[in-house]
Length: 315
Image (tube, rainbow, N blue to C red; front, side, top):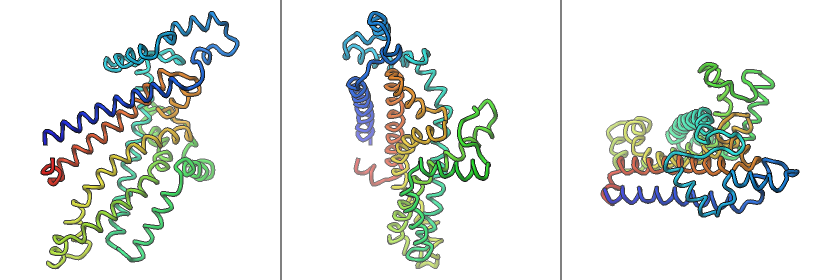
């Protein structure tokens, strides 16, 4: 058990370090000069040289990488080239939108998946099962950004129930903020719910074929009762792992959805920073999002290890 925890902890550290290296190297080889982007094509050479010196772009890459890593360890993410404020402050303000969007989307996707997966498994090879499988196939095939635009056309432009985009801020009140996130949450959750519902159904059908379920059925329980009382808990073990993996896709989806609905979150910040060649913001946001995904998967591994005795025995 202790060896398994040590192995996973080392894997977490090495993966996070590899992300920092990849992010730094990729941004270094991208064409374009951040100083030239900030000053414009008509900037004088001496002005460009002074700004490059101020931004530290004149120093070797390995020196800048080392200073960046030391800053990350101290919690100092540097100053944004474009916004001229702390990157940590910038990320903190955008997280107020991205985190609620991702958490609400994951919660909605999980709830829908459990309902649909249990319903399909309890009606295996019947009309309800076929209907759920067809519905989830459509959900998987529809891109989230396209679904978002359809939701805007229906609920914003036609019915006028929700705004087409933007975010009033949490200071305007809880309900206005949640109302602005309704359509983005639905657009982001549908595809994830469709995939997860298929996993729930497949896992339940596997467990329903086990001996302990057949014993429960022989004692007089109906298929639905055996499913809810005995099969569901065991079937959720692989589902938890898939939820952790889906969280990475959920964060990636927020980048697109935030731009579709003009939400001031981390996804929109990344797009703006790429257009402005703000390398300091891009590096830190990419590493921050990667750290969230890696940490969530690490926690899921520990949770999976805790609830599955077979893994504890193997470790």
